[in-house]
Image (tube, rainbow, N blue to C red):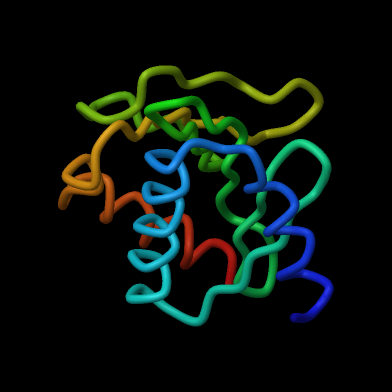
Amino acid sequence: MNQSEKATAGFLQNKSATSIALFRQLTATLLKIGNVEYHAGKTMIAFSGRINFAYVIQMGKDFIDVVLPFKQPYEDNLCFRKIKAVLGSDDYNHHLRIYHPDDLNEEVISYLKIAYENGK
């Protein structure tokens, strides 16, 4: 087990089976999009190509929260629950809450692809 895998395993420790399954589903979806790596910090798990492009920022009992940073707000969607400008930056954080594997639908995958392209 490499350092990244150890850190991720530590981050997932004591999380619910539901949120771990959702994390694994998100990871599998991102790996279908492209060459993606992930690593855990103290408070989140970052997904990267060349640079970080998606973050799991919270794992609840029955959901995971994902943030996708974009240079523009994508207001016309059904998937983001919040879009916030990042202070001191030209980024907009798009907040997505995943409750069920089906939440990783075509619309969400289309935004994951955009984020991936921005990160490679």
